[in-house]
Image 1 (tube, rainbow, N blue to C red):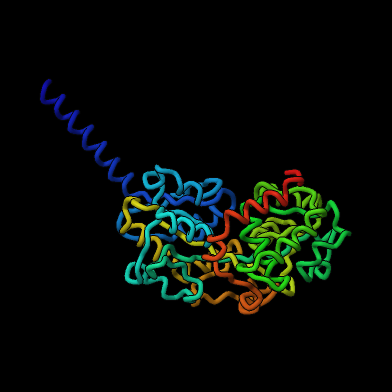
Image 2 (spheres, rainbow, N blue to C red):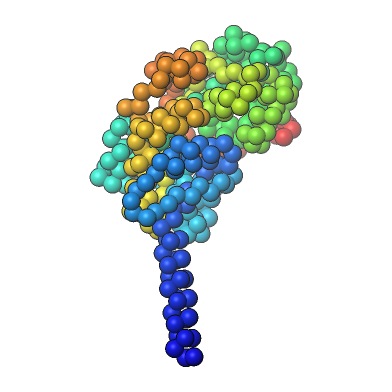
Length: 349
């Protein structure tokens, strides 16, 4: 009986050890909830076969960068998808790992001007794809020519027919591209806020999530909104024929997304295998075909039919985009978010 008991105990210990080992091999990556997580699964995870026993699990959260600010982040997540300005802010706060070229050889196919580095010149993340921030509109209520300029949003005819995002993103996104449109820049932000002051009287409500904005736009509750091109393309693929996206004559804001690793996260070697895999041309092409995510890998060649869906050639889109100095944006972000909060204080949510 005693021998049998010992055998059962040993078996239980081995089972637990095996389960622990399996869990240790699983990488968890924090991403925004919604369709984006599905694209990661379809375009990247399904074809991932590292040969080292590791698996990838997408964990959908409201704000991946916010999740990494938790003291427990290193134990909860192996990686996270964040925006450029969030990657820089997390790096400045010492909350994410940094890497050299040897650790991330896949980064060699990214245009150097789009790399995110810390003050020591080390990579703070892997740029995977980008979208752009233009003007989305309901085609039943507005025309592309109505929105050929960012200043078009200030036209009184749009009173009660527009929407804007929350201050958290209004400050680093809307204010910056509108400053550029009005002759300023991320360094000279006043022209952007002055234009926003003229637009706010036309705003019906600020949107609190992408799903919220999708509803407002497709139902015609608002005519136009500064929004993400990838979300408009996704809506159109889902059957919403009454939405479009405009790159105003002054340009649209380029929004790259970066995969980062929490400081002290386990299985760093396996996370690097995953990062170098997603840096490749093939998975990035699949993501472009599925969800309109524009590749950061310069070797990706988009097919003609996809470029027609995008409305213009890839190269032309890139030429129309404004890529600011995100370090300047991070440096001044807190004060600008406060300014945006005051600006929107009278707008309902």
